[in-house]
Amino acid sequence: MVLVRFSLVFCLTFSALAAPDIRITAGLQKDQILQRDLEGLGQASLTGTTTGKKLNGKAVEARLIGSNGVVKDWQTVGQVQKQAWTAQIKGIPTGGPYRLEVRIEGLPGTAFVDDILVGDLWVLAGQSNMEGLGDLVEVQRPDPLVHSFDMADHWELAQEPLHTLVGAADRIHWRRNPQGEYERLTGAPLQQYIQERKKGAGLGLPFAVIMASRTGIPVGLIPCAHGGTSMEQWSPALRDQAGDSLYGSMYRRFMAVGGKVRGVLWYQGESDANAKSAREFERNFLAFVRAVRRDFREPDLPFYYVQIGRHINDTNTTEWNQIQEAQLKAESEIHNAGMVVSVDLSLDDGIHVSTPDLKRLGSRLADRVCHDLFPRLADYGELKPGPRPVGAFCRNGVLKVQFTGVNIRLEAPGRISGFSIHGADGKPVAAIYKAVVDPAEASTVLLFVTGKLPDKASVWYGFGKDPYCNLHDAEDFAVPVFGPLTIQNEPQQVILPTTP
Image (tube, rainbow, N blue to C red; front, side, top):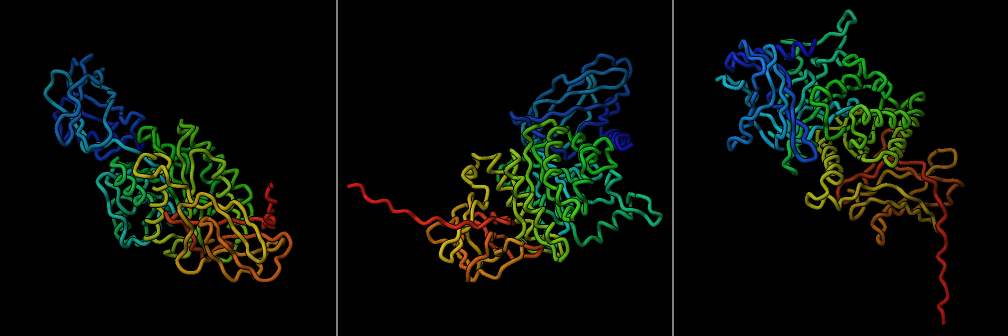
């Protein structure tokens, strides 16, 4: 039913703008961004109709026009069969915007699609912090190189809010009406909902604007997130339910934009912080990544995600930290993937990252992507992935917590906060009275402790659901939540005698 409406929209549009001899019915929209291939070229498959008779076998021709004139002149791209035609448009260079014109050989009329671009497409998926519930105040400004395939399946200039679930093409995103039935908002009720929104800022647009400004390459966003959803609700087993499941909706939209994207940005895990789901989270998350790569037909598809941050709530604390630890562990188990941290960021309510810090989070994701996918851009190839704990050693009342992946040095505004010592039973022990970056090793934190530590003690960073954490490196990559990390006794330095 969605495809029928899609075609009708194009028929009406182009019948008004083009001669009656040829019409484009599907395949490209105004403002669409096509995913470029390894050679930096985009392609599209078009379908259309013609009202002319006795045109069987006639060639369908196309040309591409940019801001400075013709980019690709008229060439045969398809053929008319029974007043219908299909065409393969290939070799569209990275950049744009372009106008694509289509005609039938020997006929004067043309149909066209304006403002086509070629660049990189990113899927935005997960739950509310990816959907975006930051306050709609001082939001990220749009950029002409960043477009969005909105949830109603229309390409447009990307602007906040990217996600409008109530007007989505897929039923899985709709609200229930008073009768308990799923109902899509359209027309005046939808416009009223949009005008009255107070929340909706996310990290996707800041990420995309930064990427476009750094690379000059257009960025297309595919919003697919839905607040309050669990890994179970994102099950790949539900792919064939299409718009009646989250995974199915994401897959359908992936196919609708051409079946090719640059990567996935994922932010989810809060809804799995419960006794039942936390134990299975890591396994389910890894299975999800494998399924996405299989179904998107790209075994090395880049996948970047956010470790969940804070929640102003004192229930399910253990499970919350289990999710964070599972996400940290998964980073080393997934190739072509990376994690960024949110525990040090401010909130706009009890659980959702604030609009200013969503921009900061988008920047962290852009840094990771630039390091991995654009290493020759500026000095991003030299950028390290951010601090990751590797060991904790205690000697003479000083606990050394060592990190790898640190850019230049660890630092914090004011007193370093976020570390805690725990006994074998997992309970916190009051022990730390000072924390500083090691003057001799800028990737190590020194924790000064009082008294004797209990046997089998461990160190945590970000314990609980609402810790105050402020440690990051010089490139603003934050230290992730971790724990328990077992504390070991540092061996005494052995000084060997000098050989005579």
